[in-house]
Amino acid sequence: MPKRPYVIEEMISAKAIAARIEELSREIAEEFEDTDKLVVVGLLRGSFVFIADLVRELDLPIEVDFIEASSYGDSMESSREVRILKDLRGAIEGRDVLVVEDIIDTGHTLNHVTNLLLSREPARLKTIALLNKPSRREVEFVADWIGFEIPDEFVVGYGIDFAQRNRNLPFIGKVSFVE
Ligand code: 5GP
Ligand code: MG
Ligand code: MG
Image: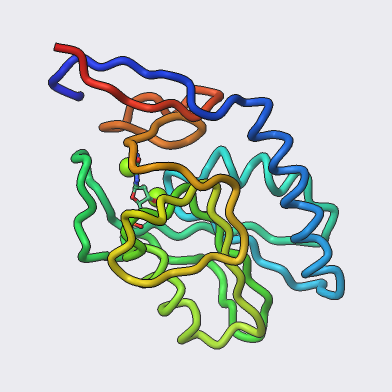
């Protein structure tokens, strides 16, 4: 549990997220219109709400799989060293893959995960993140689709936690500590 009291201010409303997902899903459907073997891979745990909303807007034959990588633990700082805690259930060789992430910050997580998945030789690998903090990048990573660019603020909600709390907020909020 977070030790200091904090408040959450809405940054991106549930309505704005839904509208953006509709736009993104049209672009994704166009990219993958020719495929019958798309695997949508969610990065646990932060992407679970985003992937649920995204796949329901995709009128494509898809499978869903998950991979879990360690990142922040319960702190607010990225650990930089990325470990795979839970691997995919299915093979992706020769398949089309869309990796779904909640937020790109330093870039270490997606850089590591996409390199790992590329080593398995998928036919095509694309990435989408709901949020992007470009000012925080430590390794170069450019996603194929981004929901929203945000400033360097610590955010929660819509699947994203602070020390495992607040994942169930329907919007993206900014955390500020109160004294
Ligand atoms: P990266 O490896 O790009 O630094 O960070 C990726 C992960 O760090 C994200 O998937 C997310 O879990 C976590 N993260 C980055 N920024 C934030 C943030 O503002 N709030 C929360 N709760 N997690 C974040
Ligand atoms: Mg994450
Ligand atoms: Mg987290």
